[in-house]
Image 1 (cartoon, rainbow, N blue to C red):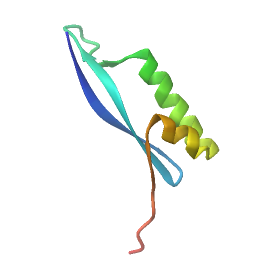
Image 2 (cartoon, rainbow, N blue to C red; image 1 turned 90 degrees about the vertical axis):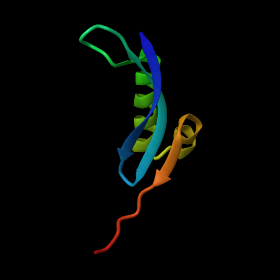
Image 3 (spheres, rainbow, N blue to C red; image 1 turned 180 degrees about the vertical axis):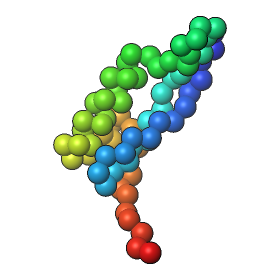
Image 4 (cartoon, one colour; image 1 turned 180 degrees about the horizontal axis):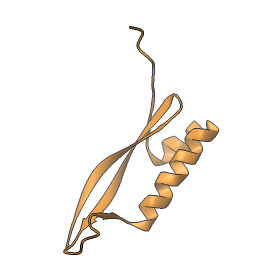
Length: 71
């Protein structure tokens, strides 16, 4: 069984959050999987971005503003 850190990107509206989570690999057919705490944290960040609560989202992740590029 091994663990590795990866970055997950969450996009909501004009914001994007970069979150570091822990993936666990094992010999079963269900790997890699995310720890339950990380799943809850991803949901909390997504909910904070939907509400526009950037202070809550930035406490748990790096938050970026997305700007459309005119072509």
